[in-house]
Length: 233
Image 1 (tube, helix red, strand yellow):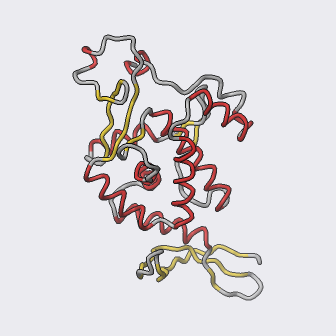
Image 2 (cartoon, helix red, strand yellow):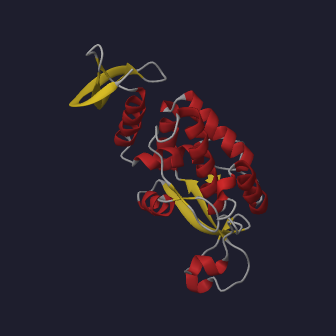
């Protein structure tokens, strides 16, 4: 079937995964060359649904899966991701699993940049800062899972510390609503990734990436760890 793009767009009335009526806006229209029939594509439907969710909760599209990953319940203590490297790599794995399930570039997802500490979501750092300012996330420095009080001037210690991230009450309310609107297959992928990676040590995680995605083996040469010196930059 050969589809030709047009300049026309339409709204599509459909049902969400809870059988509630929703309207997806500005879906591009294509024409099937042989029959002249006007059609819309599944890719555009999926992307429009992402845009609908982001608009509904006043977040950007990348935030959908960041908040869903934090919200996914794998019997962890609190809605928290300890150590930012876990957030990096879990988002990377969700990204890759979505590609395998839905196809490349079907879902609107944060891109991954190549770094010595492995594939890292391009916008995660700025997203965390933005969501913290909006009272959706609490991002903090921690040692042994506990918040470190005071300013950077008070943290003159060589002991290992990390960046931890948790949902606030406001964030958990938003994330719960987003979670309920995601396709069940998306939720299953997110839970599966989080279960496998949540407690994995950074060295083992690097080996896992090397084995499953060998294209990163040459570039991913350092364990994705956070140190005191790194956080002061």
